[in-house]
Length: 301
Image (cartoon, rainbow, N blue to C red; front, side, top):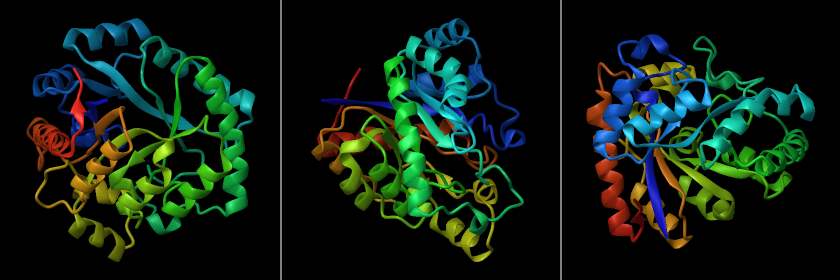
C-alpha cells in the first residue's frame, strides 16, 4: 500500500484572495511543485480550463491532477440542475484520472466574504443536513458512474464545518459519498482531527494536510473575525512549520493503521511575502515524507 504526495497551488495562486498572490504564475508554481518532488497538483482557477490544455500543462511538468475544488449549489438546485452545473468538471476529472472532485456547498457559505465573521456562518440542524446528504448521495453516485469519485470537503464558514456537521452528513449519506479529510479546517472548527479520523476512516478517500498557527487562530476567535481575515493573517501553514500545533505524526500513524493508499495533499494558503511558497512547500514535502517513513507509509512513485 502506498500514498502519493500532492499539493494545491493555492500558496502561489490564491483564488479567494487573488491580490495576495498576483505576482506568481501557473507555470512557475507547477515548476516549483515538480522540482520539490510533488507527484500531483490540485486544479486551480488559473490553470487551463479545457481538458487537453490542462493535460498538456500537467504533462509538461510531469505531475498528475490529484483533485480540485468544486463549488456546489445543491441546497438551491435540484439534482438535474446540479448535474448540469458540474458535468463539465466531472467529465474533465474523469478524463484526467483524478482521484476525486473536492466538493463543498457554497450556495450559502460565508467563507469568501472577508467582511462577515465566522460566527455568522450557516449552522443547519440535523434534519436539514440529513436531507441534504440524501440528495448529495445521488449526486455522488452519478459522478462515480461518470468515472470520478465525489468527496465532500468540510470547510470553515460553510454549513458543514465542525465534527457534528460531518457526523450528520456522513450518517445521512450513502457510501457513494466520501470524505475529504482536512486537518486544518478540523482544528480551526474546534474538532480533534484524530477523533474524526478514528470515527470516519472508512469514508476518508482524500486527505488535506494543513497546519494551523494557534496564535493566529486565537486572534480570529477573540476578534470575531472572518475566515479570510485569518488566511491573510497567516492562520494556515504547511506541516513542519514550528509555529504549528497539529499532531501530524499521530494522524499519519492512523492513516497507516487504516491502510490508507490515496493522496496526501498540502493545502496551505498564506501571504507569500511572509511565507515564500516554494520554500514553505519544500518544508511541507520534506516533513510529510519523513513522517510517512517513520509511520510505515510507503510513498509511491
